[in-house]
Image (cartoon, rainbow, N blue to C red; front, side, top):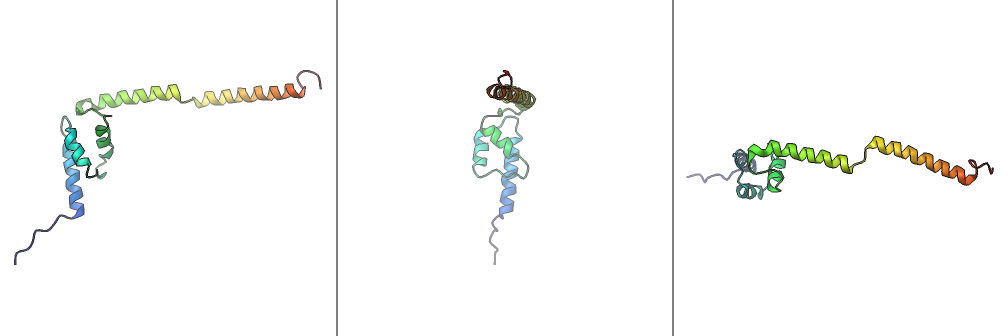
Length: 119
């Protein structure tokens, strides 16, 4: 009796899909259509490639691998500039907070008459 061909197990399918994704990512210039088709079936994170796949599919990284490091350095620099521009410096905020507290205390003392001699 001839045995029927066995169907691949889920773990084998996962490894196969992971190897196809790794092969797609190892090309000098990434084929986004191929990567999109592979990713549509899910991106296993066993090799830690999920974030790279998403960065490519969302246009955060260029298709040409030779440009990745340069592009990432540029993005990190932009991020630092945005942080400096839009996020408050915690030391400065604390200093201003202390000054504000002092002004508020002085206003309260003025209202109570402590600083005018009316009291």
